[in-house]
Amino acid sequence: MSDMHTHIREDGTALTHSHSHTHDPKEVRAIVNRLAKATGHLDSVRRMVEDGKDCADVLIQLAAVKAAINNTGKLILKQHISHCIVDAVENGDKEAVEQLNRAIDQFL
Image (spheres, rainbow, N blue to C red):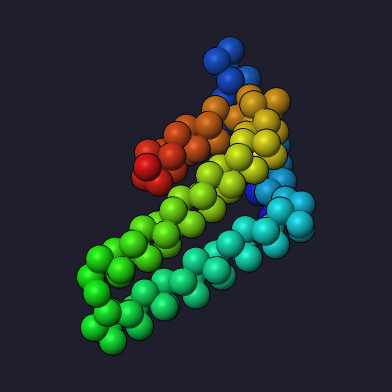
């Protein structure tokens, strides 16, 4: 996905550029696989609740789902910094850095 946008630099000049939002297909596949595993695990936790399994066991499994999602988020963040933010900084795109900061605040 490519997206053309304009930024006003501190000196008042306008910078229009395209931010190419692409990632290595292997990296994308790794994230999708992690999310699929977390989804499957969450489905099993739902079944545990429906089947009346022990609450302590449900909480332990739910903690595993939460950790899987957090680790996936960390991977996405690392890739975003490596690809998108590096490109944004090189092009003076302060808005992209601000968006990342807001996303981090929401994720955490």
